[in-house]
Length: 114
Length: 115
Image (cartoon, rainbow over all chains, first blue to last red):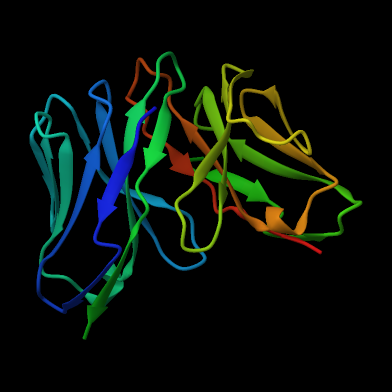
């Protein structure tokens, strides 16, 4: 099955700096890669996603890049703010039919220091 | 309605109790999921329903019994749980594949404590 590895497990940055989180996946059939942000005690919230036919996607301060050949994808957050502090999970989608499985990475605890 | 809702928010139960978790969505999504999440860990997939039929069961113990009465509602029946089953139980739903890839939307979760 699919295996997703995520690094780093913890990341501290100064407010205003950039943060980068990296993930690798194993199944070349995976074609959808979402990123979720989860604040303490809250639900995972989809913040950005990318499909395998796209190399990069940007939404304001958040961007995701995908390298299909190397099987890795990354989340980039620019101009970080304290409210960006949370656990971030990457995921890869595999399977077939109407319900496709998400395999999650182990998570990155991002702390933005004021 | 653009949200997945879950009830109850918190549940404390003994090992001999029977309880149920409920999940609801009115977004026309035809796939619904149950996940278990332990502290500081990613969500672990338990069950997937597609068009009200169980399509994936990730080798979950039989003390967890899912049910999908209709396309908007998903239940998880609990019986004879163990303390190690204490976790956050998340429900998610996703649109039909023809509309989007597997974009999954999560409910707020039920925090379950088994004594």
